[in-house]
Image 1 (tube, rainbow, N blue to C red):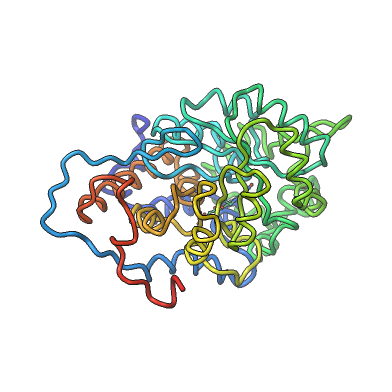
Image 2 (spheres, rainbow, N blue to C red; image 1 turned 30 degrees about the vertical axis):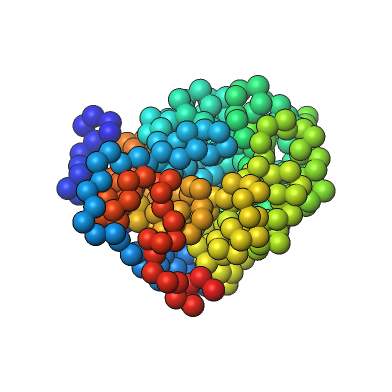
Length: 396
Ligand SMILES: Cc1cc2nc3c(=O)[nH]c(=O)nc-3n(C[C@H](O)[C@H](O)[C@H](O)COP(=O)(O)O)c2cc1C
């Protein structure tokens, strides 16, 4: 943890919800709600977290676990514990350190970081900041030509896998954003911003760091041919022209020699197809409840995907993870590792790298304690025998 960071002392920041509260205090409402919110009625957002509550542990008694191994291997990388950092767009708005700070924290914790296409720092700087694996998440913003440039840079910089997000045919309707004037605040018209400025002014700590960082960042990794970096305000329109299809996936495979991860699947048949099309891993994900609302919780979709791919590819999942016990539950149900989104982004927003360090420390300690209380000596030893016979509502 960074020295002198009073907000993060361990008696005040005990769990991820504490980081969420600190993030809410530091960020203007528009930025906090962008991070915290979900699509439409936020049914899936809530369900992602609630689904974990339906899964009940079945510990083995009278077991003293000596050395406890949290290590997991994902696409050939040994991770110190089974959680990687998910791609989170606009991270530099949450804190100037943004993607660089998050990647550095992941590397120090012995795990991996996935850089979103929607990032304010140059991908080369993000790669250089981390001593762990870093993957690049691709949206086809700006078309194939812009993507070719990014893929070439990512390969040369040393990104070891490519993540293709396939649940974003258009941006989901996150109702908090228009209410908070997110578009107006990112745009250039000072007049349009006026109604939303008072809330920003009541968050001087964030405002000062934002202004010192140069204001709204451009997308340093989406270079439009002949135009330069894409503007943040243009992302929604560009996304609507950037749906990724199976045909694009075949084209991407020709451009990218390394492993490909398909993120954003909820169905067994889609996961099987991704495996057959050459993916090395899939991420069972509903984008943290930010895209199509009323889809099932990712945890609920996990068993179908595990059964359908039958060991052909590695399976990751994300959505709703706020505690280490959630990570353990997902692994018992067949995930090799999980991705965490908001859990670390709250930390980033609260205190930059120190906040991400703390989020990872909390989750790692949770996982280890949960294993010891379950009477299981390693993450590799987790399976469904540590869960109660599934209730119909969760797993069938
Ligand atoms: C603020 C925010 C921005 C996100 N941006 C991206 C993105 O650019 N690309 C992507 O594939 N997923 C993105 N996601 C989805 C995450 O990668 C991940 O699937 C989701 O956050 C998992 O749910 P959780 O937040 O409950 O852990 C974003 C999520 C959040 C909260």
